Length: 621
Image (tube, rainbow, N blue to C red; front, side, top):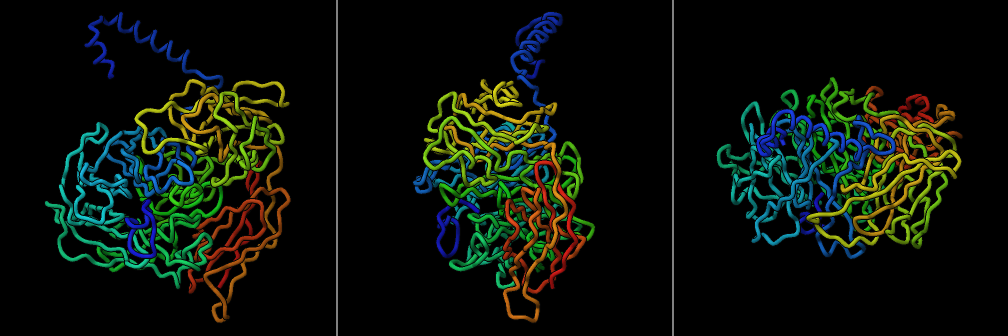
């Protein structure tokens, strides 16, 4: 969902060196060049090597670590300036991944889906006079040309094209698009060499599709309603943090199309970007403009629990190995309803053509495309969270932003020091000496003073120390000279470390106070992993009994060694693609079922030492 203020009707517009070149230039001989290169390389290694070498990373961790811009809209920062983006779309084009998202004044590209380089660019012309620079943009390609267009309610926006986007080389394909719309997506049907546009963002009107003229890229024929929400049947489409649908009709938005084995998968977001249950569903058809039928397993992208919550309004794309992934919006929604981040989830199609994504442990370290893993069972690294709700010491505390809010696995809460001074610190006690594989540092925007995308910024600078006794400390990671903006910095260690205590000490903040919403340490503890959960019961009204069948109440016996649980659900025992992560409780109310369908459920417990065996699968009529 894009970021215009919301009203109870139509749109989010209202709601929301080469070295060869070096040699030629310097005109030096081969031996001199070799010597120069060698010396430069040695100096670089000496300067760049930290206390403990950081690996060529095999994993990433959600939210993804990119230099998110700050919200540029004055009405949206009255409760505090903050970073924000959403409505992401990624495509793999000419050997690189390209990422566009709402209001970033540019875009990112990457060769490995880990290290993203930002290219600054304003796509809209001065006469447009809007804050929403490429709000909820469409990103796709036709043959060798990348296409981009943003959301609009008028017919003034251009469609941009580039055959060399890594160099910021863009031209107008269409000066004024007559197919202008909110939340657009331009889809190229490669086999037919036809182009379509899908769009819509409303709690009143459906999503639409229209064919575009292949030469002019203007509409050709009538627009056709292609999809509308049915929240009376689909509980997950109901509005509200708990899908309770008590105060506002749900929104459908974020149209996206994927073609797979001659079928068209029309994807959509619902019910609201502000909520943890923000999800993507899919309808399937044999023609690009339908008719479409609701896929039996929905929502296919869903993550209501854990640290990074929400998996709606996104895009499905293929990596360099032609494996599928889904990128979508993660909600923070603390300083404003549209304070959001980006997550990437393994996805794919099963043998029956069901589109799914794997979000179980989706905010823990996950293997990158370079590792070529199986999405259903091999993408999770197996490194567990070591410091959930463990003791914390800090240098200072600002008001109610208490220390343990940095380890409570809630991205909405955070600890803040009283200042941004060098020397402010946080110490996390793992409880025992543990094996450490990776660390994620999630900064919170406390008293920041930036808006929009700054032309330059000094990066986050810090040092992480380890200790076995809390007295004698050794440097683990030294980023005191870092110059990159890393709001969700993720570090995978080349060699695992062992320690009980970790201390992160601030050296410099780009803006705002030293504040952390999540100091997350991953690896393996030395203790016992949980056992199988006992007495797992899903309570749901029967098909012939009066009751709300879109809801289910899960109850189970508390596993003494558990930090949390993952509940799996689906409409067949072989396809438990949905998952919900629950911390510190032995019950969960889920209001996201389809009323008329049979469901199957399963649960497993986890802690810092590993994951317990899955329970028996329970069937619910």
